[in-house]
Length: 221
Image (cartoon, rainbow, N blue to C red; front, side, top):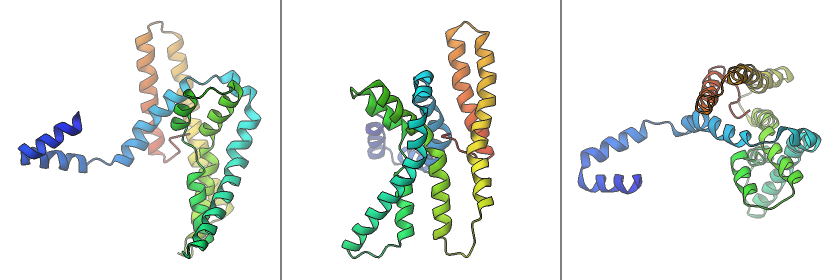
């Protein structure tokens, strides 16, 4: 409906059309999506997660979100490289592995939506959903490491650099969420009104996203 109204405005009033175009162009969609919407979407997805079931399947989830991501990166990168050779396209192998790292990261929002429409075992549902929530850390370090290797600027990446990145992006993001989540939990425990609990939960998610963005940690984690 909004799109139709914008089209009508564009045909009838050129001034309004220019105002809409200017306003839309001033919005950094990627920033809004990653820094605002993503936190709320992931919160909505994780809210329906059964912690006890996840604890029972912790080892398959850990293996898939770590070793599984690495194997997926290698397999997809190698296949992409072979296809490029068959098509006589010259792409460096390291660039193919970067592509493999990019597409090996599963989207928990999409995974959750697909699983809702499928009738699969509860155990398998938990493993797939859990992997999609926890694979960000490994994928992040893998992607940045491969990108640094492919960088031709002459800069070298040390183990210390990787450890610092992991601490900032992964441990920093998780640490802030644990502290803020516990504070929110303490507040919610003393309240009986459902609407207030809901508002505190949503406000907590948005506040955490802002804080994590300021220290440049991982918002999805």
